[in-house]
Image (cartoon, rainbow, N blue to C red; front, side, top):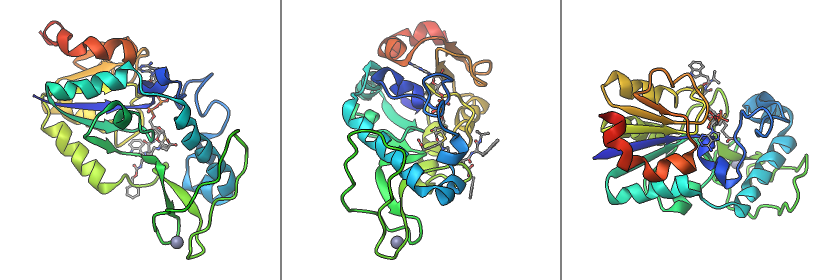
Amino acid sequence: MQLTVLSGAGISAESGVPTFRDVETGLWAKVDPYEISSSEGWQRHPERVWAWYLWRHYMMDAVEPNNGHRAVAAWQDYADVHVVTQNVDNLHERAGSTNVHHLHGSLFEFRCDACESQFEGVLPAMPEPVEEVEPPLCFCGGLIRPNVVWFGEPLPERAWQQSVAAVGNSDLVIVVGTSSIVYPAAGLPEAALANGIPVIEVNPQRTPLSDSATVSLRETAASALPGLLQRLPTLLG
Ligand code: BJW
Ligand code: ZN
């Protein structure tokens, strides 16, 4: 069986990583998403954006994968599992998933915003979150930016093509912890359904996908994923 898991910020919530859109605890509850996660915001205030991503980079040292990430990794014993994640954290890999496609980049990679060179230098330590940090300079004089995908930017071509192929070849798609509003990622389960591939959604809240999904479970990732494969006969009939 081939299985694709499409994950979003909610799968890491039970590890203590805030989601984006939660109105109280979300990463964007206190900052304007279009200032902090857009190339216009980067151009206006690179030192604010850099400080925010540096904080999120270092925050990952303090968190661990949860039972949701671990369940997805354990499924590799029973199925050909592709993880397509919108997350820039590395918790799927740390839980043991080996086939992870990062659609929105990584908190652990940095590149020049002018010549695209990968940054291999040392990052400044950040024991406490601060509001502004000057980004390092590339040898070409350009600014070093996080290798993540902001609104209006194209997704990494290889990860996108591999994700489209993984979904198209799957017998089942499990969508977990995403608000399903950011495209093109949100189009992947729609494409699966259009091709007759069942889609199971795991999310404590309803999303735009909930009505069309084959099954929509109002449960958290860490509680639903560990027993999900055993429940398939009941859920899918
Ligand atoms: C739990 C839980 C628990 C809580 N268990 N669940 C078509 C229509 C309309 C607009 C567009 C379109 N196509 C493109 C667009 C524009 C835009 C877009 O989609 N806008 C919409 C918002 C309207 N898309 C883009 O701009 C994309 N680029 C693009 O299309 O380029 C085209 C192009 C081609 C060629 C040349 C140039 C351009 C890029 C999108 C990039 C998104 N970037 C971000 C930031 C990444 C870096 C970072 O991490 O900082 O990605 S934005 C942010 O949203 C981040 C996330 O990956 C993404 C999705 O968020 P996610 O993961 O769903 O999190 P939340 O917080 O929204 O939801 C969490 C969910 O978890 C909730 O539902 C909770 O209930 C749930 N949950 N606890 C399970 N324990
Ligand atoms: Zn450069």
